[in-house]
Image 1 (cartoon, rainbow over the protein chains, first blue to last red):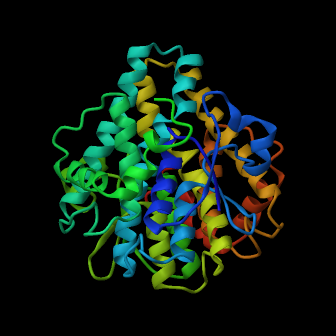
Image 2 (cartoon, rainbow over the protein chains, first blue to last red):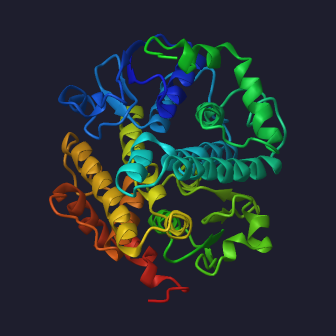
Image 3 (cartoon, each protein chain N blue to C red):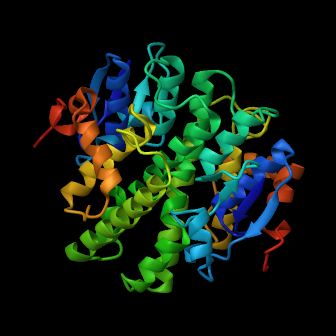
Length: 213
Length: 213
């Protein structure tokens, strides 16, 4: 398999975690978002929506959207599972993942921050305030949802799931903007547990070949 | 089952479509978003993240996040299926759904538009331009993704899927803001096919008991 991705992209990071959790080898193909490489013809041929990541299967089939890719990996390589087997529990884990992927991250990605500055003439301080606002509000909601679930080592239960694949990149992203993580006890305990797991270590931006830090 | 939802909420509309496609009866419990009912204690007890929709199962279990709810319905009531059986095809349908649910809709929901006006002091025209920009960019990407898939009656194939459950509410939403739908031939053909289907008719905002139009 090949993964077109960018070290700092949260959605790319989610898929890298899933690949590492499954122990699947892949070819790392960097797409430099800040240089706009995702909008060039070569990448648009792989991803018509011009978004990272794109997984290319061993049969040469390109797949976009991080959550769809991770569910594909989970269906085609079931061990270890990234979703519980019970439908209700699966729905709870998916909902936690979507609370990040549909409610927090879309408001804070590069193209949105660019629009704020370029089109709405928002200054640096207001841009950072916007960023922190959505991370804070979203993670408080995430923490409240966790509070009514049984406590485990990770976000849901004692093994990493799709929800952890989404949580960790969101925390990394928030740390870059000094977001407020106070009072997020369950959330941050799950994050800390993930960061003690070798798969999350291997997938993190500083481990990537295109890392610039 | 019970569905806490709001007639105009796109995420609620997605779940109503899925329930109608499955032929499942449900109790409609309105939550008035504009009046802020989702932030009141009564609803927060059902949905700690204070988002609509929430499905409450026959066993009294609350489930949030529209895509997670729809997959739960599909797993517990498999006929008619809302996802193909092949993993690669499932990934393609999920990716189309997420292209709307993770890339377009989050930028245009009520709380974001409120933030633009209240906190960033954006005027009405710039707010509308923001709205139309993300709908347009997102649907152009959606159309480009469709262009490399086999053509069918609906978004993917000849039966409605999860992708159609997401597409139709997004088009309704865009129509309210007079978004530009030109050149979206495949996308709008799928939308038109959906609107000839009774399930989509029954689920639409104007059919809802809390409809104010």
